[in-house]
Each structure stands twice: as C-alpha cells, then as structure tokens.
Length: 158
Image (cartoon, rainbow, N blue to C red):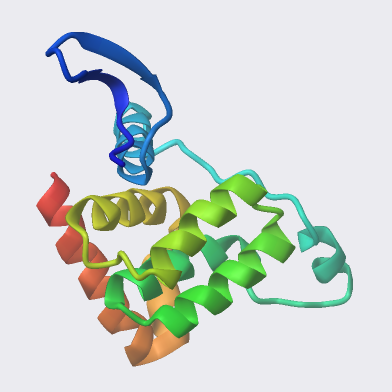
C-alpha cells in the first residue's frame, strides 16, 4: 500500500484526498521549513537536563549534541550517531516525535538518501558551534573529517 500526502488518483482517475503522509513527505516538509527559516539566527531551544549537568561541573558543550549527531550520521557512523541522539534526547529534552524521526534515519539507515542528507545538513547548520574552528581544534581529526563532509553537503544544497 502506498501512503501519500495530499492527493492521489483513485482507480477511476479522480483525485482523492489522503489523510496520512509518508516518512519522505515528513522529511521534505522539514527541509522546506528549514529552508524557509533564517538559519543564521536560528537557535536550538535547550531543555532537559542541561542545567543539572552544568551544576555538577560537566563542561562538554551539550548543546552541540544535535550537531555531533548530524555529522556522525552524514559520515555514516551510525553507532556514534545513535549515541549522540540518545544523549541529545535525555540531556537536551528533544521531543519524542523528533527523536523518533531521527532514530528512524540512523536505525534503518537512511543516511545515504539525498533528501535525508539535506535534512541532516540543515539541522547541523542550526546546531553548529559558534566557533567551529575552536571546536575543530578541540576534538581533532575525527571531527575534522566529519566537518569536511558537512561542508561538502552544504555546497550541494546551496
């Protein structure tokens, strides 16, 4: 059974409205939403346990968990991506629905799909460190490789 968003032809060739959407349609809608937003001023709303972690002295910039997730997924490192996502869900307080969508991407894995890569790239744009160079120096070669993949994906969507 094909699930589509919007309209589809029935057996007689007439248009009929569908009230369900596919995973791909959700990805396309998110891409459209993110492309329509001013990403330079976009910020990730932080919630979850971030304040609790800061009180006990955790210094990892937890707000970059989503960025690290996106870069790991773009590289195809699904284990790292799953770990970053699990931590992001708990620490940042990502919504269950958003977490489910991102989980489907790395558990299936769909990270080679062009539209999914575009979505991951746009999410990385809004969650990237303010000073990527300092972040790059701090986390070394692994991050540098992932960051280069991210930069290449950015060029593709511009």
